[in-house]
Image (cartoon, rainbow, N blue to C red; front, side, top):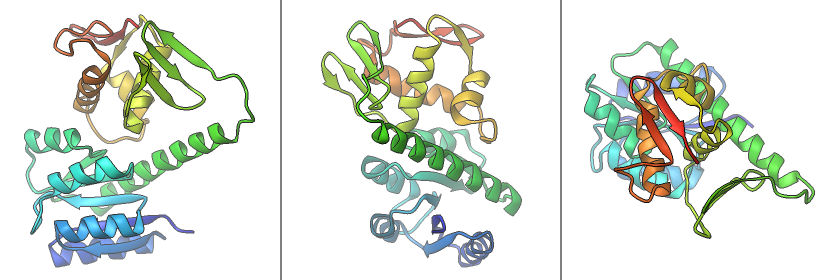
Length: 237
């Protein structure tokens, strides 16, 4: 069954161009032109990827992403008409996986679509493999009151399960597997997001901030994920 892509774009010519090229590449495509329709369509078809414009009628893309991220882990590629750092940061903070500034080449968009869908497939396969394991002892990493159950892909803090986004879990596990090592943002980006991810180190900073808010006693004075000045991050456990 072909992978599905939901295009949320209110500019008819761009919407049509995106749909044509994605269908030509073998994807199943649905299009909508406003934020409220995006919520309805996403909940109905549960697409593998959402291409989401920021400037939309009825509800902007930031709010759409914020709502959907609470309900599903579908990859979100945001489109912005401005090469503005604040747009990128806000997009990542509300749960977008990647962003692209207009105008863009169709080749670049298709490359990003393929990269995100590849990551989605890998995550799905990992989760299925974990479910298929026939009752081996759960492999865990324990750091005081923080426990990472690798087999179940669960994280527990003070005996209570944490609600982590897939990328937050992958980042935390990567840190845990490299405890006490200084990890550069570029190295983290390559290993956690993949060598074909087209983004910048700001992505890492945003996700580290989210993790700190969930696992640190005081996220403003982190003791688990510490910043190495001029270098990157180090996980102290």
